[in-house]
Amino acid sequence: MVLALLRGKDVRHAKLAARFPGSAHTASVIRRVERFFDRHPLRPADVARVVLTLLPAAQPREFILDRTNWKYGQTDVNVLLLAVIWRDVAIPLLYELLPHGGSSDTEIRHTLMDDALCLLSAADIRVLYADREFSCLTAYHR
Image (cartoon, rainbow, N blue to C red):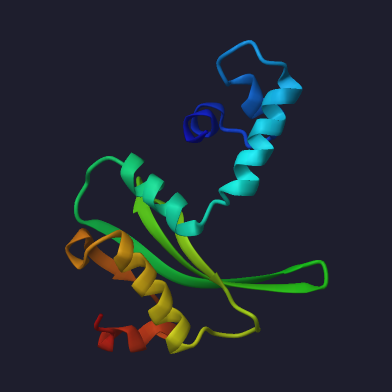
């Protein structure tokens, strides 16, 4: 499933089904793809693990911790995000959707960093970029 996703650069089930081997009808393969995602929901940590594995072995890496917010129609979307830098591009790894507007609190930031340290060791982190909202992380110890 992951290889079909990566090769095709498309997440539509019909496009995924077309990349599966065998002679099954497309509708059957689409149903198999749907059952897979129903039974095995993708968690952010799973995706982050795959992304980190697929990146070239440049150790240690640079990371960015940032919070962003925007409006989706009438809905406020507020996200705390941890990304890895690769070729001057920030690739999202882990995130927390914040249930309110404004900045994140220390507990949520620590939870996100705990999740990150389940995927990598502190030695894998060359630097963690963050703005002044995250100054309390200087005292963070796991």
